[in-house]
Structures are given as C-alpha cells and as structure tokens.
Length: 519
Image (tube, rainbow, N blue to C red):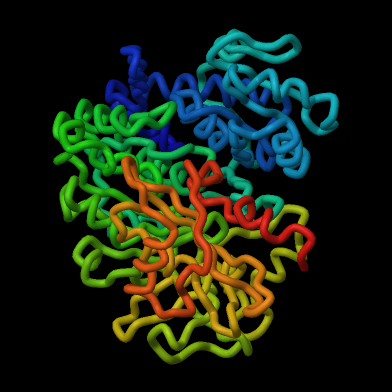
C-alpha cells in the first residue's frame, strides 16, 4: 500500500467522493479520491519543478475550496512546510507573514493572486505565485501549468517525510508569530484523540471555519486521514450551512462559537426546514462556548454530538469535555486528552496543588504534539517554556484551575485579565454571565483606565435582533449573577465585534481607544 494516506485512499476507494463544493447558486463540484490524488500529485510535481522540496516554506491563500485541500495534500507529499495565509489579509499583513516565513512559493486563489503577485518585488525570497481557479495575473503560473505537471506520485527521494506546518498565531494581542512544526502530527496521540471523539470512515465532514486556521485545518485533515467525504463551504452562511448538513447528512465538524451562534439564532421555522439529526461529532473550540450557547446548540442538535476541546495553535488539543459532561460541568473544558500532561503554576512558579477557583495557575502543557519553535523568535519560544524540572512544558498564557474530579477550567488569557482595585477579574467569566441575557447577542469585556481602581471593567455589547436592552439593564443583570467587583462599570454598544479569521474577538481593537496616551 502507498505510504501517503491520500494515495492509499485513492487506491482502496478511488470512486468515493473526497471533496464536495456545493454553492448556494447551484454549482456542485465533486472530486473522488482518485481525482483528488491526481490533482494533488500535479501540484506537488509543479512545486518540485519550481525548486520546492523537503523543508521548503510554501504559502497558500484562499477561501475554503477543493483546491485548498489539494495544495495542503501536495505540500505534505513533498515534505515541505505549509504556511497558510489569511485570505482577508491587507497587502501589509500578507507581506509580513510571507516575508517572516521565508516562503518561496505561494499558491493562491485567483481572487487573492493579484495582491500576492504585487508583493514579489518587495519580498526577495518569494520567487513564484501560482494562481488557480480563475484568471492568472501577468507573471504568475496558472491552472494550465498545474494541468501540465505529471499526475504520477512525486519523487523526493530519501529526503522525503511527513511535511510540517508553520501557522501564524491569531495576533489578538500583537504581531502574529509563526508556530513551527517540522513533522506531522504524532500518530499515536492523534489516533487516541480521534478514537475518543468517535471518528469513523463513513462520516461526512463539513468545514465550519477557514482552513488557514489551525483548528478547522487539523480536523479537516483528520477527516482526510479517515477517508471521509469532506464538504467545503467557501463562504459561511448560517442557513446555507444547514442546507449542506441536510443535503449530505453531515456528521462531523469543528466550530468556533460565532458561526454556531448565528445558526442557533435563525428563526425556528428556518431551522425546521433542515434535518440536523445526522450530526454526530460537533467539536467546540477556537474560543470558549458559553453555557448559554451550548444549551441553544443542544436544543437544535443531537445532545450526544457536542464535544468540547481546549487547545491552541502552538500546543494542539489538550483537553476534551465529553457530551455527558457538557451540562454536568458548566465552564469546564474537560480532562487532559490522551497523551497530554498539564501542570498549573502559580505566580511564584510553584505547582498548584489545590482545587477550585481560589487556586488558579498558568496552564503549561507537554506532549508529542507541541510546536517546536516560534520561527525567528527564539526569545518568545524560550519565554513560553520552562527551564527547570518541568522542561518541555509550554504555555500560551492561559489561566485555569482544576476541580476535585480532575476537570480543567480556563479562567481567561493571562494578558486579558483585568486587575481592578487589586482584584483579578477574568473577562470570560463576565462574558459568560452576560450571554445568559436574552437581549444580548454577544459581549466583549475588557479593562479600561480608572483613576480610582487602576482598571475598570467595561463591556461592549451586541444586542440580539429586536432587542433594545440598555446599559442600565446590562449592569443590573450582571449584578444578579456576579460579585460586585466583576460588574461592568461602563457599557457601550456595537453592531458587531471585530474578529480574527478564526473567530476570536480582537479585544485590542476595542481596548485601544480607551488606552490612547495611557501607560
């Protein structure tokens, strides 16, 4: 049997649909595993002809599509390093990531190709842009070049390997950093996790989020590993997502809270048009799902389908909360995933041994799935780890605590914590409380300057459709559910919250106007 997993599936189930793109306009593209293998081989051989190979950085950019699945597979086949690019990047943002990563070749959807082609003069390392799916700008390669490449398996000789990835962190607090892995996922750890989640070969997976983000790409790759059929949604639409779930009897996905919030907020008569009973494994992550959102999901989908994982681009999946615990353990992200070690350290660097909210600590993780470096940022990588008896443990700055059954609770990101009058306030806790108000669609909580308290708790609210909830009502509701020092001292309203492509709220954008000219 071939060593490459895609080649193996193409040999064993050549006619099975591998990737489906079904757009609202009625255009349906279906590639079988044999066709996906052929296209991936052609892209892989073109990359080799352009000088790529094991260890070479290859960028790719574009909305979810069958072509994205192709390039991800092609990069893996030649042992190169995959560098996903957010297709919403401005020219300056794209130039930063391409330049910092030293990507030599970028494979791009034709919509993004003109922007990327315009960067070649600024970035000496960027030698080639391949534009696919439409017109190719002058000076770039095209679909014709891909079609002309051999369809045979690429040959990289003894230097071949599983390939790797360098995914740039979301950048919610500053410049993104390239989290480098020069090898593929650990097979044993991955197999144990997917077995716990109940993945099967007959599942149908839908991409609920952009594949340039670590979570959606990892779980799409898991679907490919199992030989599942993958439905790609180019542009998320809540009702269209339900249409695809119904039409293809979708059974697995990975989702941030934002798209699920939009799906569950649809009118009942809209949701009732579509069968949702096929959903078996909904993996909740990318940002915390509030308990209120979980209850909305459980009212609309099979209760046994909801899993939650906690993890990050750098540290992988670290905990799993099983369906039976979703309501039994409100606020928890579960127990350590198979093969994962987690230790909490207090402010003095000592291991936290107590349980409960009064014993928080910074979350450090060790496993075979951790990233190997922040590219060109040795100091940042060193700062994320420990050099004592717990060498090999790393953190992304989250604060959490254990309960007496070994379940982990994440309070918030260390950098987002508010210190008001000497008291620690975790925005995620306040946001979860506000999310229970029917007039609040979404809330972002952060600290703003206070002469009296140092920082004061502030909330930016997105009202639910038709709601006229006032700042006074928000504050009064918070007082019913939170200690006084956690209640927002000020409230403003917005039509929507700024987000990263992965769905995380960009609190630095909300916070910045309040801190102008302040230390």
